[in-house]
Each structure stands twice: as C-alpha cells, then as structure tokens.
Length: 472
Ligand code: PLI
Image (cartoon, rainbow, N blue to C red; front, side, top):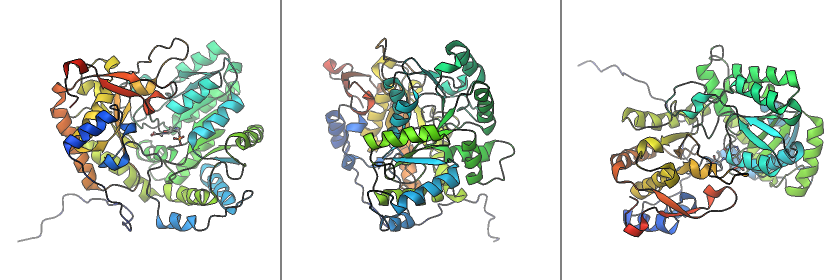
C-alpha cells in the first residue's frame, strides 16, 4: 500500500526544554476553597495552587540558556555597568532610539515620562487605555482620551488592525483641546486591552503626519511592539518578505519616545526602559530616575538583569521565535473558534480573550461577569486567567462612577516559551466545559475596593451569597 501523503505540515518551537518546573493539579473541592479565600480574584491566589498559569505574559517568560549564561556576566558596579552599555547598544540597534534610561519595569518608565511631560489639565490621546499608563497620566494631572477605531470595541469585528487610530477622532481632540494642551500622543502596538490587536504601519505613518502638522510628539508603548511587527509582516501588503527586526525598526522610527515593559516581548522576568530621541526629555528622565529608581545606568535593575534583557531583545526579534510565539496563541484560539466559543476576533498576539458578555448574558456588567468567568475557569481546571473588563477599567477620577467598557473580557495570556501544545489542549477543553455550564453562572459583588488599580487586589463575594448559590 502506498504511504499516505501528509495533508499538513506542522510547525514546532525553535527550542528544546532543558529544565522543568513541576506543577500540581489540585482537586475541585480544594480550588473552590482557594478561590473563596482569594475573594474570587485570581490575583489573590497563590501560584502553587494554580495548574496552568495564564494570568499574564508579564515577567513569566522562560529565559534561554544564553540569557541565563548572561546572568553570570553581570557587572554589578553601581555606576557605568558594562551590561548597561550592552543594553543601550541593543535598544539603539533594534528599536532605534538614541537615549536610554533603564527602569525596573514598564510602569516606572510611565511614571517618569508622565512626570516629565504632563501638566495639570493636559489631554493625552491614545489608542485605548492601559491601566497603569492611564493612571500615571491622571496622577500627573492629565486626562486620557481614547481615539482608537470603533471596530476595536466590537469583539466580533474581524478588522486586521484593530489597534489603529481613528484619525478623525484624533483631529477632533486636537481641534478641541488645542495642540498646546497635548504633550504627546500615546500609542501602543499591540493594544493589550483591545485583545492584543495590532496597529498597521500605514496608520502609524498617517498619525505621524498629522502630529507633525502640530508638532505633537508620539510616545510608543513598545511593550509588545515585536508582536505588532509580526502582524504587520503577516497582514500588511509590502511587508510580507521583510524581517520582523526591520519592521520593528521602521515602526519605532515614526515615534519619538518609547516606554517599555521588557517583561513581555524582551523575554525577561524583570526590566523596562524609557528610550527617546529627544535630548531634553532624556536629561529630565535621567534626573527623575535617580529619585525614583536608581542611578541612570541601572534604573532599579541589577547588572545581570540588564544583560538578560540585552540578550532577550536579540532573541525576541528572531522570525522563528515570534512566529511560534504568536502561533501558540493562534493554536489555542483556533480550538475555541472551531467550538464556536465567543472570543475576541481576530486572535490577538499575546492572549486569547473570552467574551464574558456573550458567555454570561444573564449577569449584568455591574455584577462583574468577566470576574466570575475567570473564577469559574479556575474552579474547573486550575487554569488561572485575568479579568479585563469593568473591574480593570476602575472609576472615573472626577465623577467616581464605575467606567463601563464595551469589552468585558477574560484574558488567557500565554507566557513565552513556557507551556506546550498539550497545556493548550487542557485549557481549551476547560473553557469548553465552563461554556457548557454557562447557564448556571452567577454574578459577584465587590466587598473590598482598593483606591488604585483595583483589579489587582479587589475582593468579591457571590452577588446572591445570602441565598447560598454557588459560583461554579
Ligand atoms: O507591568 P509593567 O509595569 O512592567 O508594565 C506596564 C505595562 C505597560 N503597558 C502595557 C501595554 C502593558 O501590558 C503593561 C503591563 N501589563 C501587564 C502586567 C499585563 O498583565 O498585561
């Protein structure tokens, strides 16, 4: 009998596993107990009680042998560490910015940037908010205004670049506020809160042209810009045969400054930076970093951390790496789409986002449907995910009303180089089970609300706790 011709050719990760970390599956009864103790907030679980941890892709990356080897080359000098200069060279080479200030993570760079550039009453337009970014803008006296395209707010819309800026919305904000009130336009690629959605090169170029007319700088949140560059390569005509590294360089070249959480794209467990072409901003940031982080040649990091970051940057732009990284997210998302489970479309770069409104139409947004869904998924299988809806959106600083975002999502975030295809299968099957049980789900009420970034530490109970109904 002739040997059958293969109908498909699979891809595999461009690495093999050298060290493993055991994980443990608890019983359903244990998980029910743990989630109650955690106030139905997955951030308050202990990681040892989690089986597959998809809380975040932030700082959860597996480093390579070359990065670990780099740790041994840490130059732990207080000033002028050789690892700082290596990091500077690599940021300059791959991201293109002239001046670098390292920070311990992304929000530290946001803090310094906001302090340096924002004045009371300023307006900062951006392609959808991010939690820490917006809070630092507000704490500095600014107001964030969303200028992302409408499609980004619709989980079912298949637009290939849902991270794009709506140029008319941006023009309107400039006309209404006046360019003098806009210290910069704040862009992110990919857009985390929209579902890991990319911005196109053409759109960024157009934003650049518009901003040039008013001399408004552009600040890029480059946290997942490599993933954004990969989507440009896959989806934007003219970029299909370009290397991701070159696309990244061009993308950043339309911006003046970047803040970075290197805990994502750059494949490390801690680290970030503020990088800029603006010498004045650099001088101010260099001053401020000494107050909040440490000397400008380490910014709250050890020399070894900067070396791991310098090496991680090089690995992160490798085409094989980024294809399999985003490919794993796609693999999980495809399963769920095939089973007609409502998720944000197209599938994002770092995570699959479950549409909690579509899961639980019986739960009003004020009873936190996404928070309940994340709790139910944990109880079903020990998979930890994160709410990205009304809890994450927090309250308006002036009216103190809860903000009610149109996207009410649960994020299944895939750490880089950590889990296998088998883990993804287990996750997909658990989501299917929770979806099958969706009619029994109940809402939650908040019993403790922190003042800042409430989603991290808020506590909940069952909305109908008095009746003894169960969450799962
Ligand atoms: O967590 P930090 O402080 O290193 O970075 C803050 C930050 C800034 N921008 C963007 C787009 C982020 O996604 C981000 C952090 N994200 C986290 C922690 C996440 O779980 O998505």
